[in-house]
Image 1 (spheres, one colour):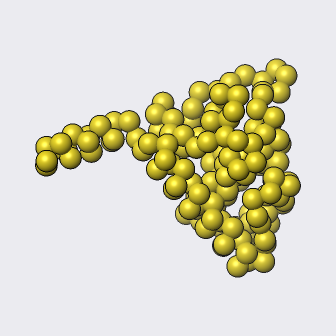
Image 2 (cartoon, rainbow, N blue to C red):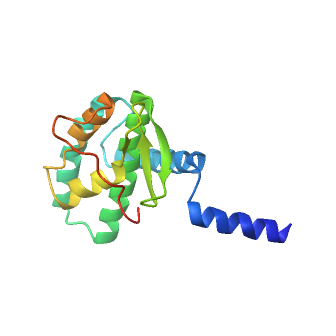
Amino acid sequence: MFSRRKKQQRTRAATGPDDAEVSTSMAGLANAFVTGSAQEGHHFDYAVENAPRLDALVDLFLRSQPSDDVVHSMAVSMGAYVGELIVRNGGGSWTHVPEGDAPGVRLTSGLVCFPLNKVAKRITIGPTHSIAQFVGVAMAGVLPPGAQPVKPPRGG
């Protein structure tokens, strides 16, 4: 029994979490974002109409000059929330992408998007990485004209 458990642990470490684990983890992080935002006076539910409000919330968040740890926490929790918006409203599903060791949302079209990375780019690079636009494109399930698929992010 011990050797089987060790083998399962090695296999899991090599392949990453399964999609059910990713889904549970991301849903929990999204709920933490909703709860934490409500405590700060910003109420979100899982209606896709909330997506445009996220860009404004990022701008407000950045005015507080948060530490790197706080920025990382916001990127992860808000990214999970963005992913849940897509999953709940667009029929996608969370998945683990081994090539980048990252959580992604597999869209009904088969494309995979990376909401945690998009939110991190919105926070660190700026408004050219619009969360509202990202959600709109993901909900449509197709790349805009001229856009090219990208490789999965490295290291989550």
